[in-house]
Length: 144
Image (cartoon, rainbow, N blue to C red; front, top):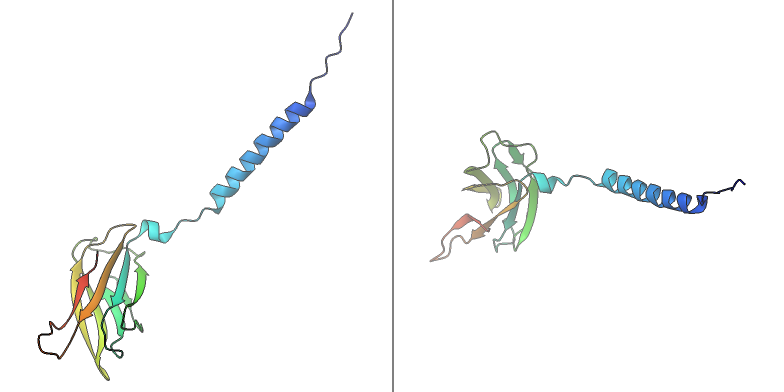
């Protein structure tokens, strides 16, 4: 006497379907994940902390980078720059120069040496005052 054994195809198909769905979702997740440049490269954040409404920051420069035609306004306006083209001399002791409007039609600049680190934001601010008695002048300082 022969027995006809029929495999339970519905359970097999269900398991296969679940596995294919999970596999498809994992491929979609990994292929859609984009590299965030802020995770790989250093970022420079420049803040204008001056309190004269006409003293905007007009340029920022450091080795290998020049950011011109800026308009970073006083009273806390800021702009960040991702430094994704590398630095020939490494990330330590880098001279950053910030150019700002000193008087109508006259610009001035201040410089500061700072260190950078991959994936981290280094913040500097232009601060101080000019012309008042007891005023320390306008200067750059590292915030973090």
